Amino acid sequence: MKTNLHAVIMAGGAGTRFWPASRMHRPKQLLDLTGSGETMIAATASRLAPLIAPERIWVVTGAAIAAATAEALPDVPTSQILAEPVGRNTAPCIGWAALHVRRRDPDAVLAVMPSDHLVADVPAFQRSVEIAAAAARQGAIVTFGVVPDRPETGFGYLEVGEEVAPGVRATRRFVEKPDRETAARWLAAGNYLWNSGMFFFCAQRILNAIATHLPDLKDGLDRIDRAIGTPREQAVVAEVFPTLPAVSIDYGVMEQAPGVQCVPVRFGWSDLGSWGAAQDRHGADDRRNAVDGDAVMVDTAGCFVRAPAQKLVALVGVSDLLVVDTGDALLVCRRDADQDVKKVVEELKRRGRTDLL
Image (cartoon, rainbow, N blue to C red; front, side, top):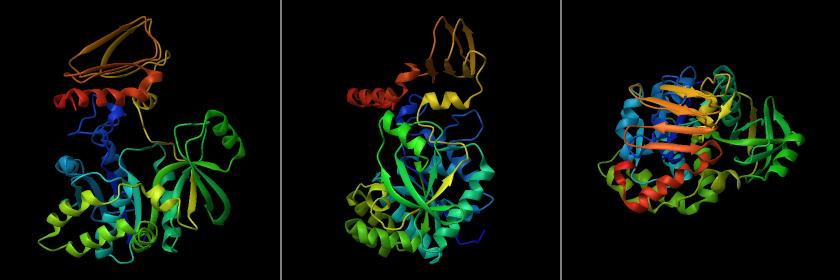
Protein backbone atom coordinates (compact mmCIF):
# COMPACT_ATOMS: atom_id res chain seq x y z
CA MET A 1 0.00 0.00 0.00
CA LYS A 2 1.37 3.39 -0.97
CA THR A 3 2.31 5.64 1.94
CA ASN A 4 0.01 8.50 0.94
CA LEU A 5 -3.00 6.69 2.43
CA HIS A 6 -4.15 8.35 5.67
CA ALA A 7 -6.99 7.33 7.96
CA VAL A 8 -9.47 9.75 9.48
CA ILE A 9 -11.34 8.13 12.38
CA MET A 10 -14.51 9.97 13.37
CA ALA A 11 -14.89 9.62 17.12
CA GLY A 12 -17.29 12.31 18.24
CA GLY A 13 -20.41 10.21 18.84
CA ALA A 14 -22.22 9.98 22.17
CA GLY A 15 -23.52 6.39 21.88
CA THR A 16 -26.69 7.15 23.83
CA ARG A 17 -28.28 3.81 22.90
CA PHE A 18 -25.58 2.15 25.03
CA TRP A 19 -26.47 3.91 28.27
CA PRO A 20 -25.69 3.26 31.10
CA ALA A 21 -22.28 1.93 29.98
CA SER A 22 -21.80 4.77 27.48
CA ARG A 23 -21.43 8.15 29.18
CA MET A 24 -20.30 11.61 28.10
CA HIS A 25 -16.81 11.02 29.53
CA ARG A 26 -16.53 7.50 28.08
CA PRO A 27 -18.89 6.98 25.13
CA LYS A 28 -19.46 3.92 23.01
CA GLN A 29 -16.22 4.09 21.01
CA LEU A 30 -14.16 3.95 24.23
CA LEU A 31 -15.86 0.76 25.43
CA ASP A 32 -15.36 -2.94 24.74
CA LEU A 33 -18.88 -3.95 23.76
CA THR A 34 -18.14 -7.32 22.18
CA GLY A 35 -15.97 -9.01 24.80
CA SER A 36 -12.91 -8.82 22.54
CA GLY A 37 -10.72 -7.05 25.09
CA GLU A 38 -10.37 -4.00 22.81
CA THR A 39 -12.26 -0.74 22.79
CA MET A 40 -14.21 -0.06 19.61
CA ILE A 41 -11.82 2.72 18.54
CA ALA A 42 -8.72 0.60 19.24
CA ALA A 43 -10.19 -2.18 17.11
CA THR A 44 -10.80 0.33 14.31
CA ALA A 45 -7.15 1.41 14.36
CA SER A 46 -5.91 -2.18 14.67
CA ARG A 47 -7.67 -3.37 11.53
CA LEU A 48 -6.12 -0.47 9.59
CA ALA A 49 -2.61 -1.04 11.01
CA PRO A 50 -1.21 -3.27 8.22
CA LEU A 51 -2.17 -0.62 5.66
CA ILE A 52 -1.82 2.67 7.53
CA ALA A 53 0.92 3.38 10.08
CA PRO A 54 -0.05 5.25 13.28
CA GLU A 55 1.70 8.41 12.09
CA ARG A 56 -0.86 8.53 9.26
CA ILE A 57 -3.92 8.04 11.48
CA TRP A 58 -5.93 11.14 12.41
CA VAL A 59 -8.77 11.15 14.91
CA VAL A 60 -11.47 13.80 15.25
CA THR A 61 -13.19 13.68 18.62
CA GLY A 62 -14.84 15.88 21.22
CA ALA A 63 -12.76 18.12 23.45
CA ALA A 64 -14.21 16.49 26.57
CA ILE A 65 -12.93 13.04 25.59
CA ALA A 66 -9.75 13.95 23.71
CA ALA A 67 -7.47 12.80 26.54
CA ALA A 68 -9.33 9.49 26.93
CA THR A 69 -9.23 8.99 23.16
CA ALA A 70 -5.46 9.56 23.10
CA GLU A 71 -5.10 7.07 25.95
CA ALA A 72 -7.04 4.47 23.96
CA LEU A 73 -4.72 4.98 20.96
CA PRO A 74 -1.22 5.28 22.47
CA ASP A 75 0.55 4.77 19.13
CA VAL A 76 -1.22 7.68 17.42
CA PRO A 77 0.63 11.00 17.86
CA THR A 78 -1.32 13.27 20.18
CA SER A 79 -0.92 16.09 17.64
CA GLN A 80 -3.19 14.04 15.36
CA ILE A 81 -6.03 13.85 17.88
CA LEU A 82 -8.14 16.80 16.73
CA ALA A 83 -10.51 17.99 19.45
CA GLU A 84 -13.73 19.63 18.27
CA PRO A 85 -14.93 22.33 20.67
CA VAL A 86 -18.48 21.29 19.71
CA GLY A 87 -19.84 18.59 17.40
CA ARG A 88 -21.03 19.89 14.02
CA ASN A 89 -21.70 16.59 12.21
CA THR A 90 -19.47 14.75 9.75
CA ALA A 91 -18.86 17.28 6.95
CA PRO A 92 -17.04 19.80 9.19
CA CYS A 93 -15.25 16.92 10.92
CA ILE A 94 -13.92 15.51 7.64
CA GLY A 95 -13.15 18.92 6.16
CA TRP A 96 -11.10 19.93 9.20
CA ALA A 97 -9.12 16.70 9.13
CA ALA A 98 -8.54 17.07 5.37
CA LEU A 99 -6.95 20.48 5.96
CA HIS A 100 -4.42 18.96 8.35
CA VAL A 101 -3.65 15.96 6.16
CA ARG A 102 -3.24 18.12 3.04
CA ARG A 103 -0.59 20.17 4.83
CA ARG A 104 1.31 16.98 5.60
CA ASP A 105 0.85 15.45 2.16
CA PRO A 106 -0.81 17.39 -0.69
CA ASP A 107 -1.42 14.13 -2.57
CA ALA A 108 -2.92 12.29 0.41
CA VAL A 109 -5.80 9.84 0.05
CA LEU A 110 -8.17 9.68 3.02
CA ALA A 111 -9.86 6.56 4.36
CA VAL A 112 -12.65 7.94 6.55
CA MET A 113 -13.98 5.53 9.18
CA PRO A 114 -16.44 5.69 12.07
CA SER A 115 -14.75 4.74 15.32
CA ASP A 116 -17.45 2.41 16.60
CA HIS A 117 -18.32 -0.09 13.88
CA LEU A 118 -17.63 -3.81 13.91
CA VAL A 119 -15.85 -5.80 11.19
CA ALA A 120 -15.75 -9.59 11.51
CA ASP A 121 -13.57 -10.46 8.50
CA VAL A 122 -10.56 -8.17 8.79
CA PRO A 123 -8.59 -9.53 5.79
CA ALA A 124 -11.63 -8.98 3.55
CA PHE A 125 -11.95 -5.45 4.95
CA GLN A 126 -8.30 -4.72 4.18
CA ARG A 127 -8.65 -5.97 0.61
CA SER A 128 -11.66 -3.69 0.17
CA VAL A 129 -9.68 -0.72 1.51
CA GLU A 130 -7.00 -1.32 -1.11
CA ILE A 131 -9.60 -1.41 -3.91
CA ALA A 132 -11.30 1.78 -2.69
CA ALA A 133 -8.02 3.64 -2.16
CA ALA A 134 -6.90 2.78 -5.70
CA ALA A 135 -10.13 4.25 -7.09
CA ALA A 136 -9.74 7.36 -4.91
CA ARG A 137 -6.22 7.89 -6.26
CA GLN A 138 -7.78 8.23 -9.70
CA GLY A 139 -9.83 11.15 -8.41
CA ALA A 140 -13.06 9.37 -7.46
CA ILE A 141 -15.17 9.86 -4.37
CA VAL A 142 -15.73 6.31 -3.12
CA THR A 143 -17.87 4.67 -0.47
CA PHE A 144 -18.29 1.15 0.87
CA GLY A 145 -21.70 -0.40 0.21
CA VAL A 146 -22.44 -3.41 2.41
CA VAL A 147 -24.12 -6.27 0.55
CA PRO A 148 -27.32 -6.85 2.58
CA ASP A 149 -28.28 -10.23 4.00
CA ARG A 150 -31.74 -9.21 5.25
CA PRO A 151 -34.41 -6.57 4.53
CA GLU A 152 -33.04 -4.04 7.01
CA THR A 153 -35.07 -0.89 7.68
CA GLY A 154 -32.57 0.79 9.99
CA PHE A 155 -29.95 1.79 7.39
CA GLY A 156 -29.79 4.11 4.42
CA TYR A 157 -29.06 2.43 1.09
CA LEU A 158 -27.11 3.02 -2.12
CA GLU A 159 -28.45 2.05 -5.50
CA VAL A 160 -25.51 0.93 -7.62
CA GLY A 161 -25.11 0.53 -11.34
CA GLU A 162 -22.50 -0.81 -13.74
CA GLU A 163 -18.99 -1.90 -12.83
CA VAL A 164 -16.51 0.90 -13.60
CA ALA A 165 -13.36 -0.91 -12.45
CA PRO A 166 -12.63 -4.32 -10.92
CA GLY A 167 -14.58 -4.42 -7.64
CA VAL A 168 -15.98 -0.89 -8.11
CA ARG A 169 -19.46 0.13 -9.27
CA ALA A 170 -21.12 3.40 -10.15
CA THR A 171 -23.46 4.85 -7.52
CA ARG A 172 -26.80 5.87 -8.98
CA ARG A 173 -28.29 7.43 -5.86
CA PHE A 174 -28.39 7.47 -2.07
CA VAL A 175 -31.77 6.54 -0.60
CA GLU A 176 -33.24 6.95 2.86
CA LYS A 177 -34.20 4.18 5.28
CA PRO A 178 -36.98 2.12 3.65
CA ASP A 179 -40.05 0.43 5.06
CA ARG A 180 -40.04 -3.38 5.37
CA GLU A 181 -41.76 -4.00 2.03
CA THR A 182 -39.34 -1.73 0.15
CA ALA A 183 -36.32 -3.24 1.91
CA ALA A 184 -37.45 -6.73 0.88
CA ARG A 185 -37.86 -5.59 -2.73
CA TRP A 186 -34.39 -4.02 -2.74
CA LEU A 187 -32.86 -7.16 -1.26
CA ALA A 188 -34.36 -9.22 -4.08
CA ALA A 189 -33.21 -6.71 -6.72
CA GLY A 190 -29.57 -7.19 -5.73
CA ASN A 191 -28.32 -3.70 -6.62
CA TYR A 192 -29.13 -1.93 -3.35
CA LEU A 193 -26.44 -1.87 -0.66
CA TRP A 194 -26.31 -0.58 2.90
CA ASN A 195 -24.63 2.78 3.35
CA SER A 196 -21.69 1.99 5.67
CA GLY A 197 -20.58 5.55 6.41
CA MET A 198 -17.03 4.78 5.22
CA PHE A 199 -15.52 6.97 2.51
CA PHE A 200 -12.36 7.35 0.41
CA PHE A 201 -11.12 10.37 -1.52
CA CYS A 202 -8.07 12.55 -2.01
CA ALA A 203 -7.85 15.29 0.60
CA GLN A 204 -7.91 17.97 -2.08
CA ARG A 205 -10.81 16.25 -3.87
CA ILE A 206 -13.09 16.37 -0.83
CA LEU A 207 -12.12 19.98 -0.07
CA ASN A 208 -12.99 20.90 -3.66
CA ALA A 209 -16.33 19.11 -3.30
CA ILE A 210 -17.05 20.98 -0.07
CA ALA A 211 -16.26 24.26 -1.84
CA THR A 212 -18.74 23.36 -4.59
CA HIS A 213 -21.61 21.95 -2.55
CA LEU A 214 -21.12 23.55 0.88
CA PRO A 215 -19.68 27.03 0.27
CA ASP A 216 -20.54 28.27 3.77
CA LEU A 217 -18.57 25.41 5.26
CA LYS A 218 -15.70 26.14 2.88
CA ASP A 219 -15.54 29.74 4.10
CA GLY A 220 -15.25 28.65 7.73
CA LEU A 221 -12.66 25.99 6.94
CA ASP A 222 -10.60 28.59 5.09
CA ARG A 223 -10.44 30.68 8.26
CA ILE A 224 -9.29 27.67 10.24
CA ASP A 225 -6.79 26.69 7.54
CA ARG A 226 -5.07 30.06 7.70
CA ALA A 227 -4.57 29.62 11.45
CA ILE A 228 -3.21 26.05 11.44
CA GLY A 229 0.32 25.97 12.76
CA THR A 230 0.13 29.52 14.17
CA PRO A 231 -0.18 30.62 17.82
CA ARG A 232 -3.82 31.55 17.11
CA GLU A 233 -4.89 28.11 15.90
CA GLN A 234 -6.73 26.98 19.04
CA ALA A 235 -8.46 30.32 19.47
CA VAL A 236 -9.61 30.40 15.85
CA VAL A 237 -10.92 26.82 16.01
CA ALA A 238 -12.80 27.67 19.23
CA GLU A 239 -14.31 30.74 17.57
CA VAL A 240 -15.10 29.35 14.12
CA PHE A 241 -16.01 25.70 14.65
CA PRO A 242 -19.30 26.37 16.49
CA THR A 243 -20.42 28.52 13.56
CA LEU A 244 -19.83 25.86 10.87
CA PRO A 245 -22.94 24.39 9.21
CA ALA A 246 -24.00 21.23 11.05
CA VAL A 247 -24.34 18.93 8.03
CA SER A 248 -23.44 15.34 7.29
CA ILE A 249 -21.00 14.45 4.54
CA ASP A 250 -23.69 12.14 3.10
CA TYR A 251 -26.28 14.88 2.66
CA GLY A 252 -23.89 17.74 1.97
CA VAL A 253 -21.52 16.08 -0.52
CA MET A 254 -22.10 12.40 -1.29
CA GLU A 255 -25.71 12.86 -2.42
CA GLN A 256 -24.81 15.94 -4.48
CA ALA A 257 -21.48 15.10 -6.13
CA PRO A 258 -21.51 13.48 -9.58
CA GLY A 259 -19.72 10.22 -10.29
CA VAL A 260 -19.57 8.77 -6.78
CA GLN A 261 -18.28 5.20 -6.87
CA CYS A 262 -19.01 2.26 -4.57
CA VAL A 263 -17.07 -0.83 -3.52
CA PRO A 264 -19.56 -3.59 -2.61
CA VAL A 265 -18.27 -5.31 0.53
CA ARG A 266 -18.85 -8.49 2.48
CA PHE A 267 -16.76 -8.43 5.63
CA GLY A 268 -19.22 -9.02 8.45
CA TRP A 269 -20.02 -5.34 9.05
CA SER A 270 -22.23 -4.03 11.83
CA ASP A 271 -22.72 -0.47 13.03
CA LEU A 272 -23.33 -2.03 16.47
CA GLY A 273 -26.14 0.39 17.04
CA SER A 274 -27.79 -1.01 20.17
CA TRP A 275 -27.51 -3.44 23.07
CA GLY A 276 -29.38 -6.01 21.00
CA ALA A 277 -26.67 -5.85 18.34
CA ALA A 278 -24.03 -6.24 21.04
CA GLN A 279 -25.85 -9.31 22.34
CA ASP A 280 -25.64 -10.86 18.88
CA ARG A 281 -21.83 -10.53 18.97
CA HIS A 282 -21.42 -12.38 22.27
CA GLY A 283 -21.43 -16.15 22.30
CA ALA A 284 -24.94 -17.34 23.14
CA ASP A 285 -25.94 -20.59 24.80
CA ASP A 286 -28.53 -23.01 23.46
CA ARG A 287 -31.31 -20.79 24.82
CA ARG A 288 -29.93 -17.66 23.12
CA ASN A 289 -28.69 -16.15 26.38
CA ALA A 290 -25.43 -14.18 26.41
CA VAL A 291 -23.47 -12.91 29.40
CA ASP A 292 -20.73 -10.34 29.93
CA GLY A 293 -20.04 -10.81 33.63
CA ASP A 294 -21.52 -13.28 36.10
CA ALA A 295 -25.10 -14.50 35.75
CA VAL A 296 -27.44 -17.37 36.55
CA MET A 297 -30.29 -18.01 34.12
CA VAL A 298 -33.26 -20.16 35.20
CA ASP A 299 -36.07 -20.84 32.73
CA THR A 300 -34.80 -17.86 30.75
CA ALA A 301 -34.29 -17.38 27.01
CA GLY A 302 -32.95 -14.73 24.65
CA CYS A 303 -31.54 -12.52 27.41
CA PHE A 304 -28.33 -10.50 27.65
CA VAL A 305 -26.61 -9.54 30.91
CA ARG A 306 -23.69 -7.14 31.31
CA ALA A 307 -22.61 -6.46 34.88
CA PRO A 308 -19.51 -5.81 36.98
CA ALA A 309 -17.46 -8.92 37.77
CA GLN A 310 -18.18 -8.61 41.49
CA LYS A 311 -21.96 -8.67 41.02
CA LEU A 312 -24.04 -11.77 40.27
CA VAL A 313 -27.20 -11.21 38.24
CA ALA A 314 -29.94 -13.85 38.35
CA LEU A 315 -32.81 -14.02 35.87
CA VAL A 316 -35.77 -16.34 36.40
CA GLY A 317 -38.66 -17.05 34.07
CA VAL A 318 -38.07 -14.17 31.65
CA SER A 319 -37.26 -13.85 27.96
CA ASP A 320 -35.76 -11.34 25.54
CA LEU A 321 -34.53 -8.90 28.15
CA LEU A 322 -31.40 -6.74 28.17
CA VAL A 323 -29.93 -6.15 31.63
CA VAL A 324 -26.99 -3.75 31.97
CA ASP A 325 -25.60 -2.87 35.40
CA THR A 326 -22.84 -0.28 35.85
CA GLY A 327 -22.92 0.01 39.62
CA ASP A 328 -24.54 3.45 39.69
CA ALA A 329 -27.30 2.63 37.20
CA LEU A 330 -29.28 -0.39 36.08
CA LEU A 331 -31.01 -0.79 32.71
CA VAL A 332 -33.72 -3.41 32.15
CA CYS A 333 -35.13 -3.30 28.64
CA ARG A 334 -37.06 -5.51 26.25
CA ARG A 335 -34.80 -6.43 23.38
CA ASP A 336 -37.32 -5.15 20.85
CA ALA A 337 -37.23 -1.72 22.54
CA ASP A 338 -33.45 -1.31 22.60
CA GLN A 339 -33.54 1.63 20.17
CA ASP A 340 -35.46 3.58 22.83
CA VAL A 341 -32.64 3.49 25.40
CA LYS A 342 -31.61 6.92 24.13
CA LYS A 343 -34.92 8.22 25.52
CA VAL A 344 -33.63 7.48 29.01
CA VAL A 345 -30.71 9.80 28.30
CA GLU A 346 -33.11 12.48 27.08
CA GLU A 347 -35.15 12.16 30.28
CA LEU A 348 -32.04 12.33 32.47
CA LYS A 349 -31.03 15.55 30.68
CA ARG A 350 -34.51 16.96 31.29
CA ARG A 351 -34.16 16.16 34.99
CA GLY A 352 -30.68 17.64 35.19
CA ARG A 353 -29.13 14.30 36.24
CA THR A 354 -25.69 15.10 34.89
CA ASP A 355 -24.18 12.59 37.35
CA LEU A 356 -25.65 9.80 35.22
CA LEU A 357 -24.89 11.21 31.76
